[in-house]
Amino acid sequence: MILGIGIDQVEIDRIASLLEREPERARERLFTAAERDTCEDRARPAQCYAARFAAKEAFLKALGTGLGRGISWQDVEVVVGDGGRPELLTRGKARLLLEEIGGRAVHLSFSHEAGLAVAAVVIEGRKGSTGEPRA
Image (cartoon, rainbow, N blue to C red; front, side, top):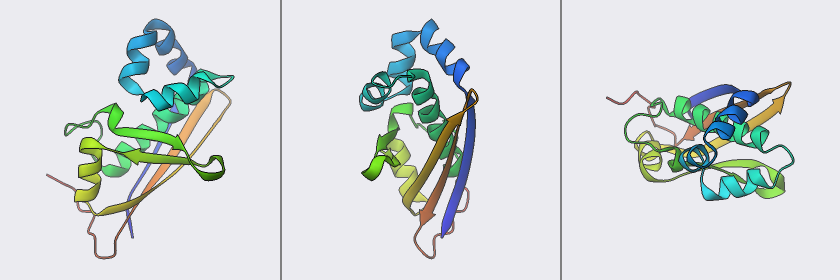
């Protein structure tokens, strides 16, 4: 059963500008160490960071909370799964809220082209989960 769907689009240049203005602070606040390692090894790091930022935003939309309720950017992490497929891991408050709505799987897809990065997230839950908004 689908409990939430989120999509987000980010201008890659916007993320590149942020990373130029506040290189260490932005990277450490928005991305996990593993995400930083992955993106810094890429030919176009800003493109990689933008896709991950869009994925985090899409997840928060699918969860229905935004960046509220105590969730940190570090609580949501994009990793490279089998065959290079992106996967989304949660921890901390993001994990607790995901479990609270009955979330069992998080599906992620993202792409980048023409100066934009876009990500889509679907949260899947067990049969009988309501997915009702939380107070």
